[in-house]
Amino acid sequence: MTSEAGPLMAFTLFCDDLRQEAGGKLSAMGIYHGVMAIPAQGVLLPKLVAWTVFKLPVSQMGAAATVLLQDKDRVISSATLDFAQSEQLAVNGLSADPTDKLAMLNIPFELTPFQAQVGMEIRVVFESPNFHYESDVLHIIKAA
Image (cartoon, rainbow, N blue to C red; front, top):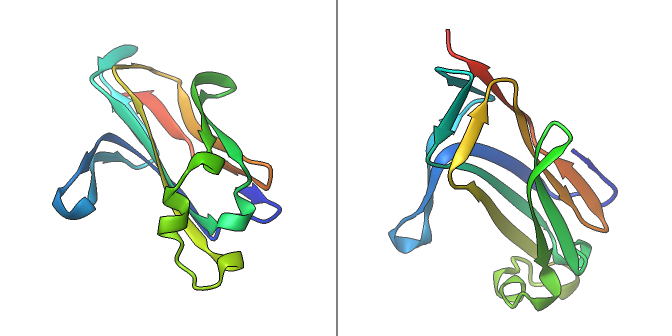
């Protein structure tokens, strides 16, 4: 991860599903630890989720950001986040000082279905005016 005024915390989990529980908790099902082993050269999976979480000062977020899901340099999916329109940021500020409020961003990327291919290297890339984040890579390999 690189940054000029980077997040205080950032991580990405790759998993089969992300579920909302009673009480607002999130549960990740089928978490991959850097490697997904598939039984054939290509397998159609019901879903792949890349769940990225950031904790950062609201003042450093800028008005918008771009989130990419990539296989090496090929963009699989992308989204633009418009922070200027988000009322939730004011609600989720964690600091009493308005110039130092922290925001917790949960960004789940769901690919439904997901065509897994041996040799893929999946990562999340987050770009905003103030920082750049790249997740660790999920390597897709052929099961032994």
